[in-house]
Amino acid sequence: MRPTTEQIVNALKNVIDPDLQKNLVSLGMIENIVTGDNTVSFKLVLTTPACPLREKLKNDCIEAVKKYVDSSLDVRVEVSSKVKTNPQVSDKTAILPQVKNIILIASGKGGVGKSTVSVNMAISLAKTGAKVGLIDADIYGPSIPMMFNLSNQKPEAFEKDGVVKVLPFEKFGIKLISIGFFVDPEKALIWRGPMASNALKQLFTDVEWGELDYLIIDTPPGTGDIHLTLVQTLDVAGVAIVTTPQNVALADARKAINMFRADGIKVPVLGLIENMSYFVPAELPENKYYIFGKDGGSKLAAEMKIPLLGQIPIVQSICESGDAGEPIAAMENNIVEKSFVMLAEKLTQQLSIWNAFYEATDVEKHEETCNCKK
Image 1: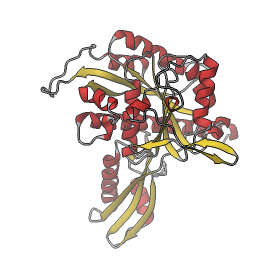
Image 2: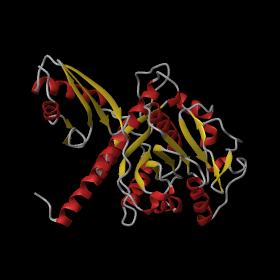
Image 3: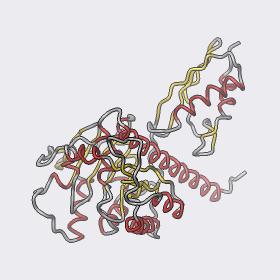
């Protein structure tokens, strides 16, 4: 007996997204239901190609159809993704209209490996199939040209509608730009705040980014003019804070979290990333040595009520690969590469939760305004 589309829809209403706490049908994640004699096929549309729950949701869908319709059905699920635009829409959106989500990577202090995390996470996101851009916004110490083996390179420029635009470099599946491409790498940049802010704005307005799912911005360390410029100029979807386990880094990370939560800024803090969590010697890969302390990141995350997105170990190859211009995330089948993939998955998972929260809040405000609550 051929099942009806209504039966399939009703069955799939029993599958709940664990993050968003709603069923997949109401979330609009089920498309193209086709039924035949003893067969059912449909598309499961995830909110990010880096979804860590991909296999679980797919299997839950198959089990729901078999349980609530017919256990003998041949259920085929095509999994795809559709990254949503950040719902916090304002007049700032006109600056980067084709960029769906802007994510800042920040740290309270320098030397915690923020650029290394930004680069490897951007590459890991691109490997999932997402369209990813990366901006090196560390105006005073740009390091991304070296990490991509693009030092002393100059991006191409072209004219569009009477305006000179810059083409970002494309490497390892991502588009990237840095202030380091436009200055002498041997000279220190001595800029006052307004000069740095104006230079940074040009990385957004003068670069032809095209359509992106995620634009990762590697910010300078600390809490200052550049961060304020970013949140005042762009619709920032969220920020991830990078720290190391020792107390001095955690204290500054706490300040950075509080800055992004402050009135007038209010950027969602997606979570904490603990870099240099422990040392793993090459000859003893099962051993962990907590050189900078243990559980500092997890304790701060619990204190600030944010997720701990990941713990990146101290591995010599991470440093060597960055210095050689081939970040470790671009390599295949190594433990560290997999840890960056997991980090990218958890970051985008938290972003999807925040985006869903804003959408739900908008609905509630609308219902209150028109008195249409049931």
